[in-house]
Image (tube, rainbow, N blue to C red):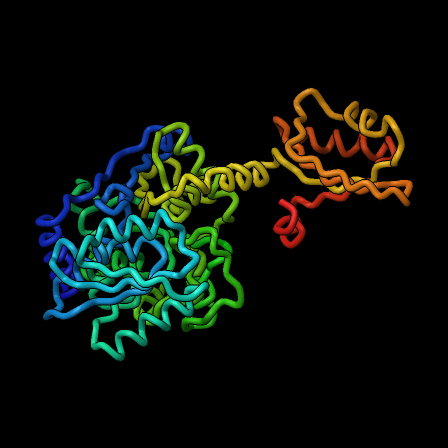
Length: 410
């Protein structure tokens, strides 16, 4: 056993004075669905509802004193704030001006009078620059959300607990990847103690920074980033974390579509009563892609967080329906004559429901454009509807898969 394993185990033991180990429990619903023995490591059940508390604790307990500062719009901010109050450390937390009020309020609640929240910049890059400038001027310790040796060591406590909670090593562990702190910490611990299970790493399709780094052989900055999975959407994986992950086989890194994650969020909420944020559902959603590979095997999925803002629920439902093929948007050229709308309504099937309708009447034209959103009970219903529209001379353009147009009109 190497020094990293010893330190990670010491960090885990120290955490027990602050918060209990998170549950590792078999999930019957997922096990039956995928024909596997599926267990969930419930990091959504820490005091701040994410694993970020671990790295913040380990890094901050080693400080000789003074203030800490960080830049975050989510779980890292809350983990640092909670630890500031618990350890009696003063902290300054920089958050973008655009951060939802719910997250700002929770950060202030966790930190109490030990934390000052500063809202700076519309985008995270500006917020990060402000935090780093503050540290350079004041001498405060900047606490990275992932690219820090002590943070990586603290996140490795998830792996320590899994081995403590299971009688035998699981056949497969599925872990999300953002900046790489959690995945690097877990892999480093397994290597250090000589017990390395099969591991799959999961990234959101719009933020696949590990995939890009493995292809280049070094961290690279993504040209574009989809921020929907905000807890794991990182444009550039950490340098320290990639040093640990650089030997990961590229075929062991899965990329899952953001909209499909929404289906998983809904299913877990409706069937299990488990509330997960998009990043927290990443590893569970990846089970869909693993398929026969996991049949009959013991699989541990790390559910990394449950800080879900329910104001996002309509967006989650919308994305889930579109990915499942149960909702589509069309632009239709409709003749400007009495009864034209009635004729169109007659084309709808018994399970078709109009969810959106905008009719822009142009008095100087013979035809007007209609934006229409339709929900149905099965994807096949849309093929039948499109065939009926074509036969009736109502040309329709499907906007559902057009990301630019969809963003503007949906």
